[in-house]
Image: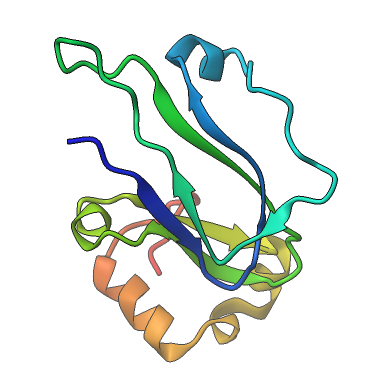
Amino acid sequence: MNEQHPFHLHSHSPWVVGSGTASIDEIHNNLFPALKLDGPMARDVYTVPPCTYDERGVCTDVGYLVLRFTADNPGVCIFHCHIDWHLDAGLSMIFVEGEEELQKKGASAFSNSTLSVCGSMQSPNSSSNSV
């Protein structure tokens, strides 16, 4: 199955400065085409291109997306694929922005709904403290 991935970052409107496909070696060696740092397009949803398959059905490259955003909104923001079953499978990640400021505020920095989700996970954070 060769699908694109429409991604969205909550709490920000990033600029798309790069998008395309590249080999695994190119990505590991940071050999992307030149990024568009002057006049990039601000977007709400951005698409990671699908991979290219060879005659055996094996991906010969991978899609990539390079975003730029101003980290000026302390909090916890989810970055996720808008295809529901991709999100259900874990195609998402969390940005924790302004960590020092959030630590100073403690639990009051987060909404009750956020805290209830964190509490229900019963998993330790990077300091081995449970929320």
